[in-house]
Image 1 (tube, one colour):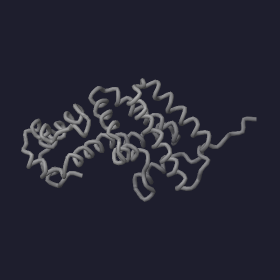
Image 2 (tube, helix red, strand yellow):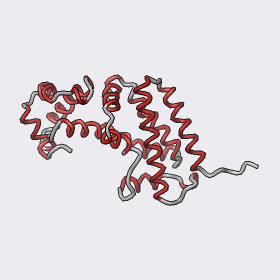
Image 3 (tube, helix red, strand yellow):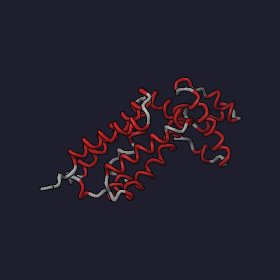
Image 4 (cartoon, one colour):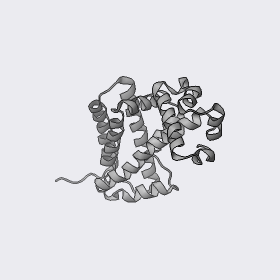
Length: 208
């Protein structure tokens, strides 16, 4: 997380620094990104940079979290839109990510993030789906899910479903990025995964 001194800056100065970081992290993968280029673009000294952030990692993951925060908000909206249908909400959330990957600047930033896959990068992405039981966020999401659709009851089982889905969704983004899949190909693959998962966690209705 940024240091308090960063948040004490004027909105314009924060915006300039973040935009400079976006330019650099979009231009090259994380390990090639240069603090020197960021501070030069932002018009600040290297010393000032370290007053705001611990290091390059600190700035990078703050920026990534800001971008992913929107997805968390959208997820709740998708659950409401689909009357609590977890799978349909997850499919639409994945479509949101793939749409973001279609914007050239966002596409390059996220591509660089996905190609720099570490446990921390994966955790940032999967936190959109995978939250902890004692977090208020999980409680809020859990209340929006229509349990009548599900063949599970315990909260720990629901949490495990989120863990499974987060792994599938992240793998789908990696697959699209590395293999160069089209949005349609990536979504077809993800829908198939969700369909198979749905057969396992949804109650089977008697059609006879």
